[in-house]
Image (cartoon, rainbow over all chains, first blue to last red; front, side, top):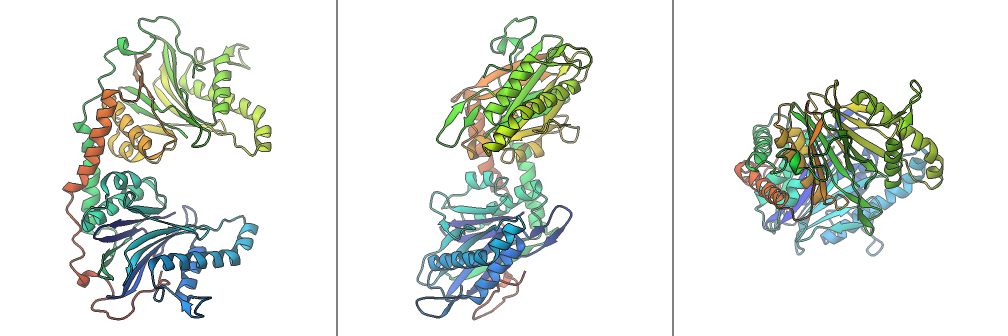
Length: 267
Length: 267
């Protein structure tokens, strides 16, 4: 399992990805899932992957080699595509090529071809964009009203993103909230694990401002996890207790009832 | 989809269940999933269901009719079982009977038989217990270290339970935290919906202290949802921003780099 989140705010883009690879709970290992490539001042592109390791490595390998463009005859890679939209299309084509090669054999082994990719970044002359590419090679883009995208086990980490992230969120607050979201996934799913890779791409710099690996025990992330846990434990304290339940009077439909009550078949 | 949670603390038991029934996002309706039966001072038993509506109704219908006991020859129901463990076994038997009747036809229709049940309560002479019964009719019990059980879409609502609930949590704080957990599920999954049914069973009273339906717009739950959302939005504010990212110096492995950098195939 995996958890990766991309957040695109006014000032730039944040990507956060775990590194746990699991072939069953008794076979865990560590693999980088977040990659950043670029050329300072020209382009910065972050790619995060989720899915079967063989499939994602095949996709990234072919993407690094490049696909021959039917128009120009040149090999297209993330270093040559003229826009982020073309980058998303390129990744879609690569996924389809790998699937065409592997799908029949995977079917035979009763395995599914599952690769999901977050693609974010900016190329000079183009705007900053954030896409999620599906196993079928089609893709969606984040929007002003939904400025984040997730792949892998997205449910645990969604609450805080949905409530705290807006397009106007500060870039490093977005990073912080992405790391909190990762904490929620780390705590609940042992198939999501440290180290955690992060990247920050500031808009219109066409460069990665930060590429960093958070190791287990790293002081800031440790402190963030402690503070977030304490805040969650404390947050409900400030909510008054429910006003119901002042004895049996408040129960519905059985005031002063004696003898057997209740039915399993009144829906 | 469904979300139900049962929480067993020192002072008693709380059950919280939604009422949304969906046959696809274009076919939503409302059905009670939480039922409480009992006899004041003798027994109080709460049952919450998740899964296919036909299957859960068949299970509850047969459970209400009762199963003939091979030992005594009498019909056993939740009103006659001598202990909560026997209640869990009875529900398991009922699930297996319904599956034996339905499974072949469901296979033909390419549908699965999916019924999960939370069963909690107390019978005079027995302790208070909380079980989760699986579609195969086997079951697990909550424990001191894991004092809650969930059925349905459990992921969104798990964070706050895992962090805030202990065996020593006050009974009405447990209800409040159960309602917060329900709020997290309601916000993220449209197949979990209001009204929400709640029940509180205080230990050693052998009675339901509260059986209540929270309707849309109910002031306390509305206020709880607002306060919880505000607390989540605010909680991250008190965490300092990440200390990384003071320019490109802090990036790893590419200090002062010019030209193309990065690789998609270094894992």
